[in-house]
View 1: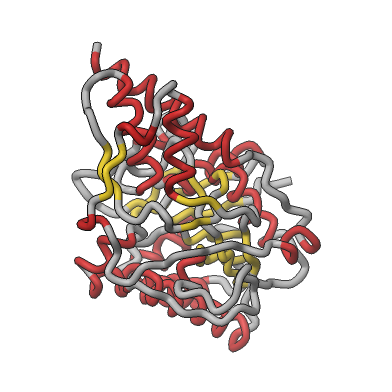
View 2: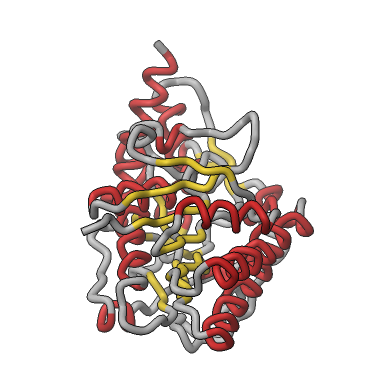
Length: 324
């Protein structure tokens, strides 16, 4: 029996690398879509590169997507590529819309014109809920995004549904709540915290400056969440699912667990800095993943504490090596 083939956009990112690992373990042939650039960072997939096939393509250029699909002939496409750093979406709102929003239309249109049998996964986000209209948030909760990133993702979410309903395509959206790991980028607050803990522990830094410590998030482990992406594309019918842990924690709690792991008291090092407050804050996001549990049989396996500890341990080791 021939191997199933999958294309992953955003394969060099946190989720892309975990998904690539997962699919390779499922004996998939995995193709990663890579933009032509002199500065592509392969760090997260360096241990997989001999098992992957990297192909050229750009969410800003539809012809390149058609060519990539014709080359890979995939059964499944996972669209994880996006400008996904929320603060940067305020600095580059037009580019964020082009990549994160219209990029999805280009991929859907490329699938429609190449092979409508391809199953498509769109990475939606809890940022769609933004100024949450109810708590917890489920698939039926009204959307109220609070950033150019969230608005772009909202367009992407609805265009995915539109193509599904208009062209009978197998197109799903996973509304993933915050998910972290040691592979999270240093610009994200969770990794900013764990990396700072390591630098403080090794005597390099003396403080950590953060914004709103009371902001609450539903944090899970990225390695658990990619399994839900795959499960969505294995169903008989396409549908959209909230993927979350159902537990909410504050930035303050994240700091406490992270500093505790290194034997430090967070209150001695964390400084609140108004420069890091968002223009429009999202105060509480809490997901209801009951539908995913019932339909997909998915549940998170890694606890909040374990996830934070994995991140701190990784950064302690990384900073120690850099300090040698």
